[in-house]
Length: 333
Image (cartoon, rainbow, N blue to C red; front, side, top):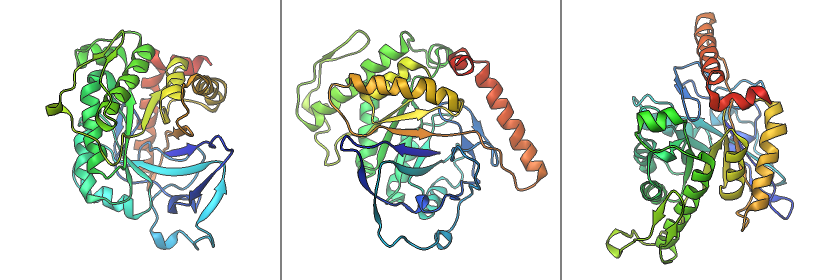
């Protein structure tokens, strides 16, 4: 997958070039990969990578080519290359360390069979540079207080390297798998993110916690349960969105947008981008450039057999999303 950071209000930004951005042929992981917010797949199946055709397996640092004469460049967009760690816990830490050494910018863990916060906390002391993101954690399966606590702990343990990726999931899973309430997902998520920031402000800035909304209320924070201020502040929020309303919420309140792999160039241009812009226009206070995280279904294989296995897995995933009402707008656009 790639993350693209748009220009700051001054029209550009000075950024360091990461190893992954020096070579357009940066390669993706042969490890198990998952699609954001949902299904998981075995080695050789869809991975989060560049949406254009490219050879995307990991490369050693020696193959990155010559280092630019200046490590800092003036650019309007910064591209970061991340990798999803998959759901296989065998060699979890070693796999993360390998990806970090190969120059990836972030490692993501999804909530498909395991708790992403716990898994990433295990990686925090084993890594030093790479960012650690929940991609995604199911927001409506937890109260904002629980999510705020988990995300705060991960951010501290990682030395400020965490990314809080959140998603709504879909109604059947929230009601029947998590036994939680589902209603007005975009409005609920809007309130959820505001509640998170109110809770963090009570810890890091000493503000009184008094958040009262239609869906959530947080009005009690005693010293015994207050973790206190963190030198790293609160983690950046990345919101997964498909529909226009949820995308607007991301533009207004989140630092990043997680684009679902079940999308299209037309949908991104005609629906997602305008909705993100509308959300940013509503933001009461600018929070910097919105990073857009893009992922895609990619079929790879070392031979014809493995390629065919991956192709069937991709077709199955696309069919699943195409038959799910929540993703129907992509087909109708």
